[in-house]
Image (cartoon, rainbow, N blue to C red; front, top):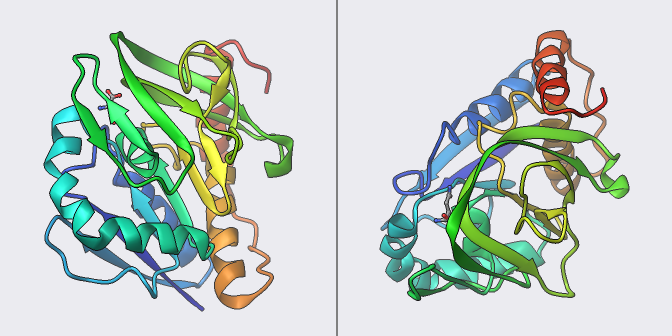
Length: 245
Ligand code: GLN
């Protein structure tokens, strides 16, 4: 078994160690004897996503999101929409999450038209939403808690076609107002969780891996790993943020 993982726009969307998510995914596969191949697709890469199993997109400032627009609208947008509809597993963080939506309007009124793979939009607020945060995933995903760090100006609102990834326990999440965090549509998982997200949320990392393996190989049971250290890091942050472990 082998998974092909794409790191999309690593040159511009990669904040707060987001790239560590890829290292976490490949290591968790290696520990289970499963191969992986990581393909970086920066701006200008002509490489196709079509045979990838999992796409990771990190976060970036408003400036970087504007820098990638030309490349995005030279075909990457259509390709991403098709991949999403085809059930490809995608993890998108913050600026990358916003990019999968319809548009982002910065707090000073500059509009980035994005790709509309997810029915959501984002509007920047003057006051940034910053800090360590905690949310609980929807019961359909096992109700696991996720810890991380958020730093965004954008307030994201979900349309009727997508479900929130979870509910905020501490912090801001999508917009600091409606208590939702992130979005889930088919096998796409978007959220504001920097950190990087996956090393201290190993159950979420395995959710992505099993989703991608199931699409490629049919039902995929992941062998359990010794996650004692990872779980300790996770639980410590849950406690610091006032949640229950
Ligand atoms: N530019 C976006 C915002 O501030 C995304 C920031 C990020 O990716 N951390 O809302």
